[in-house]
Image 1 (cartoon, one colour):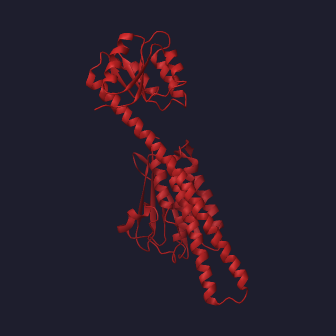
Image 2: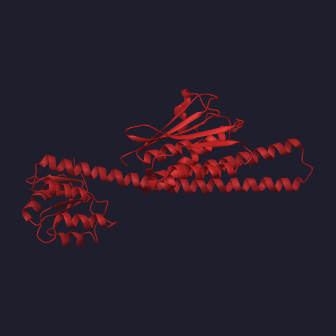
Image 3: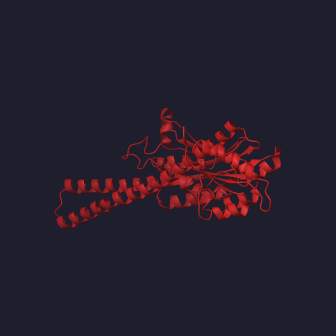
Length: 358
């Protein structure tokens, strides 16, 4: 079966180039060859092969140096590099992997092994590029959906306002009720669109890790939340929490979602209580956020972390059904996890797990 891809061989021994090139051409690959590291970098200024076969030991610039230059250049960094080496020692091979190489083949080549490694990394590279392209399309699609959906929603709100002004004070109770319902549904849909966009963008965010003071973050978020409901009696009991490693923006979003839920679902309590503490665990820093609110049936716990899945009616507690799904994705990006425990009318507990070795 004929295959097609463009492959660059970099080796200072012509016989090695000839042998490797013949194996690749026999199965349909187009082969380019250069005999020095500097020639390879010059070639890459104008051509973008699908894969590079790179000898480690060469006169002048060696393969490891060439690989470093390839991976430091954003235009070539995604090209897979397979090292060609006569060595079986681990030092050079380990350094090659650290510089960004994806595999190595020991000389003299075994045909089937050589071609299998080439085929595998070409497939991985194609899949990675296809996934990146799909993510970019999804990002563009979400932006288009946001614009195309929010624009008519804004028009609806303007029309409702204009209709109210036109009717003036002669509006019946039924008309007022209908107009209010339309405004609320339109507002809810706008919020859902915004939250869904936040959720979709999470895949494209690269966390910037730093040491975080969770206690201070929680106190700040709590102060902000209770300032919005000054008439309520809400108490926060927050123990001194361990420092964790995470992205400040993402973890702040995570904690805000969880704490805002705790504030919301304790709304019908005369005295709302939120308790935050660390739980013992050998592998994770486990942070428990517990409230004395409405709780939920554990039979439906898995639904809490799915997009647009809610366990309470809008009439009882408002929401978009995205907050905890977003929280679960944030914890996944941190190499951790999240779980929910609860009992109907006896409160809920959200436990978040940050790896200790991160």
